Length: 103
Image (cartoon, rainbow, N blue to C red; front, side, top):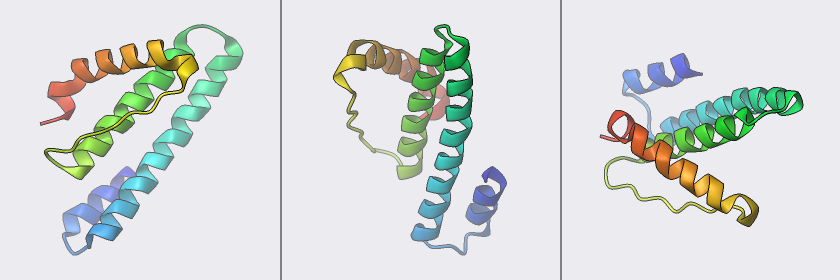
């Protein structure tokens, strides 16, 4: 997916819809990959599942912001049962990765 998406953008002959569709397909492929990792570790037990889930949410958020361009803002909705932990982790991960991902 990554190679296809990079090729699509490099060709510079595509419209915004094609680029968006390619981006969303790539994000879905990442979600499937991370879901497999998440469930594998969930059955093994341990705290790593929280890290996998939170890291993926942060990466997805940053990918969306980067894809939509400078000045993009985001609203994050989190389930009440995970609110405190998830928000803290997202804030920490976004701050840690901000200079690397959002420029």
